[in-house]
Image (cartoon, rainbow, N blue to C red):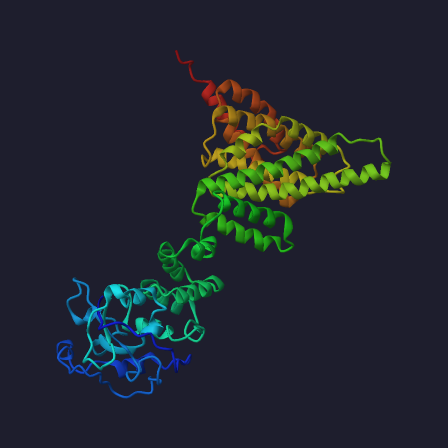
Length: 483
């Protein structure tokens, strides 16, 4: 921008300033230069313009009282050589205009205040007795804004009420860069306050992030608080809170669980999802184990009825958290982050002993008949992920998984009345254990297969998985030993 002025400036009282804005199009119509830029430079020095309802006596664009003549023009980028690069808003007819302003008003902008200061003043008077007139040129790069937006911001210098102009986030984001450019602090503050109070679209958020570096720290703090986490673990804390709420706090649990499952699938960081799920898995497993331990080792020192109530509570707690555990296992397998869950599940000798002791007792049957099914489904999901290769578990882990949980399956088959709807679960888990056993050395497989005889049925044709497992072992054992 270039600027020139004549003589000393005489600060005049601001008069006739109106807070109501006429349309910017009307202002452009009244301010448009007659002819080309070259022709404008040869006009007589007297200020002339067409009449328009956009002008208010003593206010914005009033030539009669103005002491500043500002030329606004588009500065095409070097690469934008043709007229198609000019925006639809700033068309050919609106790319060079002249407006009439008042120095005492536009000094609200620190940019204009600096241009009008003594350091930048020169003699542009039109005669010894004529008023001092400042002639300023302001080039608007196509990449930073439009003539229309700059006119709007300059008009705002004439008012203290911006609410009629800043009515949505898009407008605030159009005005803010120009206000920053002109160092118009009041306007900047108004735009920032508006943006702090309203929601943004994703595109608007990107624009705000690009403008934040140009704001002072105190101005940008609230905007940054909305888009920048205050802690490095905010993502994981939020995700963990959602999981806990989904499995514990919502009556509409099925829909909430489905929604959280979708969030987990689409979460950008699998490592974060892994840590959050493992944390929730450990908490639920701990609750189930503690409840079963308390049930299997009750304290009979109190009243019998009280003891029985506590036992019922322990079983219900174990069953409820077992269902939560099953949902977490399904999510971990779905995301292929169940490695640690498999290791933990294979190291539950105390837990499996408590389960066997509980299932040999008849007391639980009328309280939580679904407990064995919940526990076996958790085992089935993890074991199947191992057998299918979805989780690559080391041989010691596979071995402990079968050694610890095969006895639980056998106790359930021997002591739990198997409903027809759950029979397939037992069969499926039998097949999975036999598949995992087939991955062991012959000596280990021999020991474990002998424990699987309880899988046999009255008709051998009804247990082909058991027949196949033994045939496989005998075929391998019949080969000559390797040197």
